[in-house]
Image (tube, rainbow, N blue to C red; front, side, top):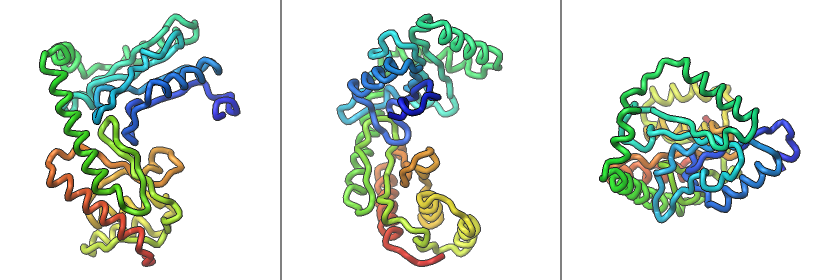
Length: 275
């Protein structure tokens, strides 16, 4: 319906696996997007940066398997998959480039734009083939994926029964999105902050501000518990909640963080003190 009643739309962008929800689209859903693209003659752009980060029995279907003869672009890279901070090396894959003259010109324009940039990724470009063809690479990735999957289970165990929030099981990437029951959010809720300097700083952020209520919670959480999450309103979403990561490798630190997070959620939703 969005495409049908908005003729200015010329393409569909997917992130699979998804940031910020950790969702992995099943093959039949990808095929559904393909049918929409076919019906309305749309370009497809798919961000597959997390394609090889899936777990708990879930695998990601490459969009190239369902693309057919539609023009499409896949965005890939190593910045999430390799444990190599700073090696933000990515690339585009063009599918059915010659399917239309307009798409072919578009691809050429993208290539021309990149060719005039000074490239600082020579080292990872040279290393990628050696790393990905190493006999231990896939087993190393599977081990890392399994560890993220285990942490997703811990998160579900700790936060799963807290009233006022909901989230789906994490399937890929290393995020999850916790969504608030918006009927429970108010602009007067708060958390206790022991450090008066932090309270004073927080007050300057909140005074006279009409910020989204999930962002308000995020600021209170940072000041009260020193836990940093990202408000879902920052992702141009109508939902109100926050994104967490599953990257903390130490079990005791991970569980302690999420227990404190869960306690803070409960306290915040029950509070009504005017600040």
